[in-house]
Length: 411
Ligand SMILES: [Zn+2]
Image (cartoon, rainbow, N blue to C red; front, side):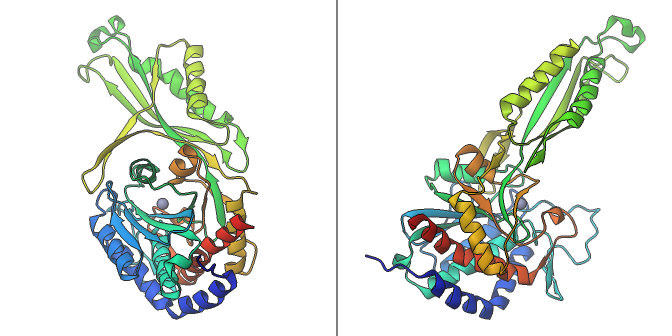
């Protein structure tokens, strides 16, 4: 029978150890920032992470079939998964960075660079939490199994890396913690999103005889106006707020630029609040199109991706809304852990953007929350910067949280 480790002992011993190793933690984040890891190009960082997991004594560390870095500590009955996607969006030529984006420069207690917020700090924290756990106790003393995942290609295919892990690698967590930036608050959901295409067709004709044609663009125009109006009238549903609909692309086709186009297609970005689903959003557009009495077809595109490992995959561009109950045992364990590490009550919140929770919570219904340093609004910008004191606080959270959750489940 394994000895159950007391939470108080974890707080006292591990926090002291972490403070001693703060420089190592900062350096780890710096190294992660220095390895450029655009979506689909994560080979080097994945290898770095798996090597670190082995160096830090994780019980298992491997690269899965998609290319995610996966580590495991402990073999207890409760399975917790910590996820940090380790891909980033690109740095564009026009972005103005105060410090070079791949240097991970540290100035006055802050670190700068691409991924300094979204979301390499969580990975650094997870690795250090694992190192501390392994240096303090034997795996058979742990009341949980902790999976640490450095997921890939999330920026292009939110949800898919964890969908793959659960569906194809047979890792089925009971609880999930996401490392997307929450500025040290406890987040429990996000608006969902989907992409939609609407197509109109007409009849091409020479521009000099345009009365003989049917212009597909003119059929689309009232649809675009109605969508602009619809966006203003979408309901606000707290705590996630309002959904949205945006025409993000217009494509037309004609035999030549001197002809009547017989094809027009618009691409829509649809954000979904509570109560809005794939079906309800489609029905809304079907009604809109029918009312206008223009023939148009509506469809959801399929995203086709390829990971750095060469694994090809497809997923329908629908990413469901999710929100965990504020009284769920996981939410409460998150708040309790935050109270210990912050020495103040955390705020419950939700992300404006999309996360891998669309797979864990949205698709599989696995309770999911998030906790990480960094401000969400700095993501994908040249202003990504992080307070290193917050990184330490988050790492304390990661070290303590599995014990708090295990204790909540037992009591
Ligand atoms: Zn992210």
